Image 1 (tube, rainbow, N blue to C red):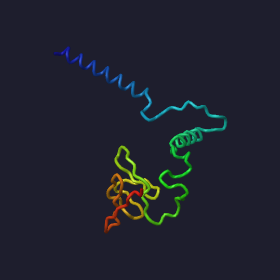
Image 2: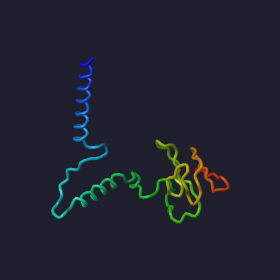
Image 3: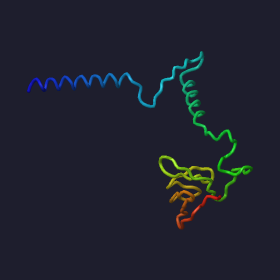
Image 4: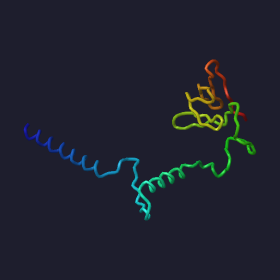
Length: 139
């Protein structure tokens, strides 16, 4: 019985030491090491600003090449919205999202003091606090 306890203690100690060493030597998930060299006169903050800018450039929309909003008809400008216009409805991993006045919104979000109540395949239900009303996709 005594030998069994000693073996279990040794095994658990070895696992703890391995886990500790592994945790110290590995980079956390989501963190990447950049091996870029600093140019003379450039400090670490300047380099990190460049890295952030590079990441932002990569996240740009793939529709940027169109030069326009893909949900708006050609020749229209997306400026000066006074009323609510449903530009599109998209499905992502969290469910449906609506694009109203070129802003992506989900259920519970506010658009021009109206709250999004429900998003369906072809329409969005909004509430102004008193009544519910529906925006439909135009065909």
